[in-house]
Image (tube, rainbow, N blue to C red; front, side, top):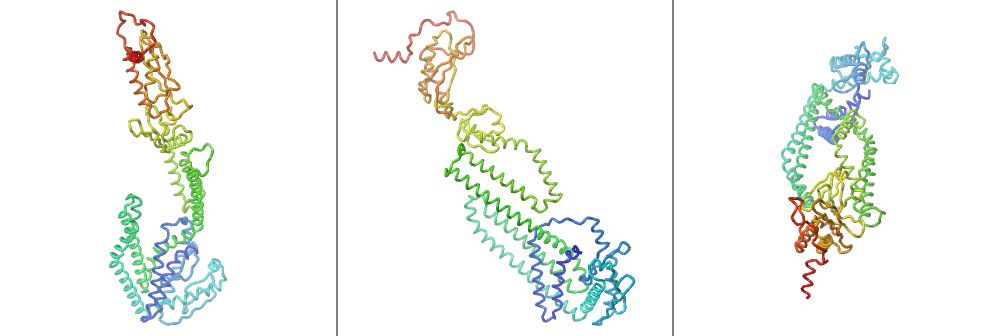
Length: 576
């Protein structure tokens, strides 16, 4: 019963509007026309503003079969009179069609303005007769379904049949046909006027909206530095407006056609069929939207709370970044990633709370889509998730900060940005290198900017010098080369280590401290140049890693070194 009433609710509004028009005389038909146009526009607004779809649970085939077998409405000229029960032997639809045919036959049997209705006892219930002819029988099953007494139900059925017959006859009189023609003509004139304004004034409306939108969006284009193109946005808005206008126009045409068909009794079944195609789906959409109002209110509350939480978190971290207050051992470059993580956590929690209230979340389609999305994410995002988790470890384990000079494998450069998925460094050759965070986490990272103590980084270089050169002289030359190199500290003093006694030479390693981690390539280059210069000044050969033959003169020191280097001897000569 509820389903039948719901499907015919909007249709009854239109039929009522038409009856209001039909009751007016030809001279006073404008009032009915105004009322009908008001209902038409209201219906159009509801159709446009209603949600695109409403999540409704369709009746199962068994329930639909039971409705058609045991419940059916009796309708005359598109108006429902009452609902009858049926049985497997006599389905409700067949019973209702028989009663409807008898009512129409009784209405067409005479043109009198009065009829005689009788209700009398019968074998199966209360029999209703019209002018002595049996039309229907109200049974105990009908009374039980309506939950009223059988006598009361029979009286109500009799009144409905009497009103339907009188209205059927009145609608087919000469005066009624004239009123119907006038009504149809009035509807046609009204629709022609609407069509004229739609087609003739649409261009002017288009130009007005274009100018208005361009003025409003000019500042937006300037603020976004032409990233958001004004003409593109205006074009999109105008296109959407055209779509909405055409939808409204087609809706108005649909209802205009329905009203014209409803004006004549002979075409009302066609109008009823047209209205059924729209009224039933529209009723489902509207009722679905109304049913989701509590869920929408809950979603609005969740969104409001979530927005305020995010605003509070933004305010907290903004003050933390500006130094309004401090958190011990919390570094400033952690503010942005921590804020991002906090927002993600808040949004995920909000989604968990909001998911049960999302329209259609309990449907099988939504659940299947969720499972599909989960499978796609799990299969295709292993690398993405790995890099994201690695990015968090890179950020919070303090291995590299923005501005640090680091070396990852054979890549040496300054850290420009630490993202969630990758770390961007600029090499000494001015190259931008993107290193996935998973690789950065699994590799050895040498940080030349981070200092362990106050002495700085220890730069070293190795040279091979033959056994014939006095070791102390070699050490003195290497130390002097370090002292000549700009960027190497004088204190702590440079020192030399013997790294290896090779086959043909002794490998000496010069070590010196520096505090300029970002200039290591330049410092090493200068150190090597100074080593070559000072060895050439003192006539000392740097061994090559090749061997031809033993010389005739053994490669041993010719004597003790006098402790004076060439530049020192030159200075002594000048002073003398």
